[in-house]
Image 1: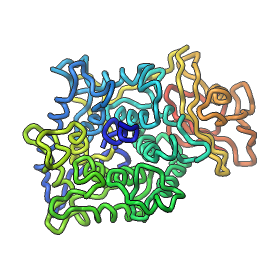
Image 2 (image 1 turned 90 degrees about the vertical axis):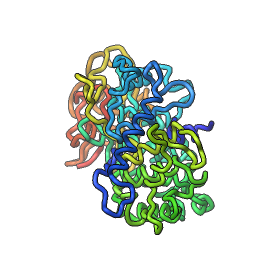
Image 3 (image 1 turned 45 degrees about the horizontal axis):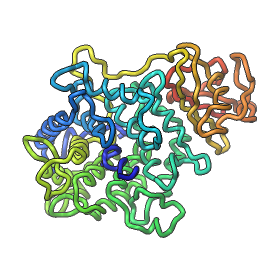
Image 4 (image 1 turned 180 degrees about the vertical axis):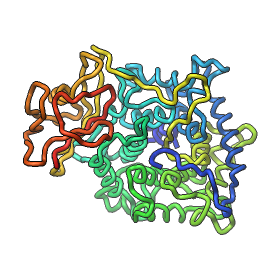
Length: 470
């Protein structure tokens, strides 16, 4: 299976804010009733629980079912409450967090989508993705794939899905308090690339189309259109935006009136419908009314529910299949439950279990990474993952910038810092000094920008943005 396929079929399967758009109340015209959706969710959750291994895992070597966490969260089930035979020591969240914390994960040759998939699912499981452990920061891992020569892309630009899922992960996996971690300049850079890759028919595909007239004229893919729509919307683009309206029209043009299915590149199937519906959900577009209620009274949600075995709860991939597919069941449940491509974790029912878990401080002597952006205020945005080994439970902005001089991926994020020592105000970065009211400022985890000082405290997993300006 190719890396692209691995992302597409939940080892990143076919994932608002990038949380779920909950279909809690449906207009009278909707054909799948709230009761039918509730039943689908209940049975779907039961089926996904049956996929848990005896050791509590959903992910491991080979193909994984970790996208189940995004579906569980959308359906209102906390991953920490999912246990094999009631053994809470092997709950799905703890086992997944332990996996992500290992030095050998994800592989000897990782790609950006490995970290994006993990970010979205860790978030849905109630694991702060920037603070998985003292050494694992998934947000910083993603930052390391920024393409300096093609700003806005993550990973090789030819694999456009890596950039789409960067937008989904970086914007959707908010802090536990609900704050978008990344600065607006980074969000804008990604949005520019998302827009540039929209095909003439209004949709998107998994490969790069920007600057290639033949690719822009090629037929789009249902799955990727859903994901790219969601990526734009969780990046702050309103659903009234022209590009979202065109994507919506593309999906409408592929709707099968008799069933509510989308006529996808791979034929009518549950995964494609699931991705399309999740895209609509993330953009706050109800998939059961208006353009998505067909002339024969069917909707995309109708099609998904029709693919579900009950009371077993699993979804089949093709209408002709006679048994459920794990991937289709994950995609189908997440979409029917009203989810985008991730969702904030619900409150657990397990006594004493917190909604969120995450590393609270650095471990002295344990190497880690931090996510850093440097914005010079003149259109040159630098993005990198900074490697450092803290000597205490916290560190400082000065120490992070100093480490970035020689231990940043990609390199060149920071080339100079003034002053080079002490704890005072930072007067210049990369040779650009403050001028009048325009000075260097810092934001941590999406907080308001304040004056940047070398002594500014930085904690484990902090997403750091420095910018020059008023």
